[in-house]
Length: 225
Image (tube, rainbow, N blue to C red):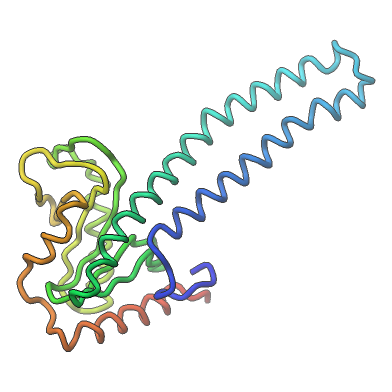
């Protein structure tokens, strides 16, 4: 897991790392594109007719790079902000006996947050979409992702898991909390209330035990062969 233990990882860590990688690649690509006309000019003796096509090609490449890479960086950045915001809410539940694992690699993917507490066991898939969202129009890929994450944790712990799809900065049309295809959909502002309303799922004496078992299993799953 990129050299860090499961319990030392913070919310949005993977998304932040991805943002930095794309920024670095974009910077390197731009530097190369800016340098190519200079080299071409030296080789061609700065003959205008010789280097104009190269300059035009470099400019066109920069334009394409901006149109393709910039939106990708923006998405990763917004995703990191959303995960960090939800992570702050989750970490604030610790005094209420909730323990969390953030940015958990499973060997097959990444789970934004896993929560263990009095109300049971939950996986949280965070999305950074804004505005008002109709639960019935939520992308089915988001629901499949969230549902699959819950099943992964169920297999590890042999305990029931409620998968949550949490929108960090959006509101749901109609009911504040909805359910679809086995996934609970809610905005981040309702997360604390939703968890507080859950019936007793795990005895308080077992919360730390389940959390430790899950962390150890994820550590093993993400370790290099």
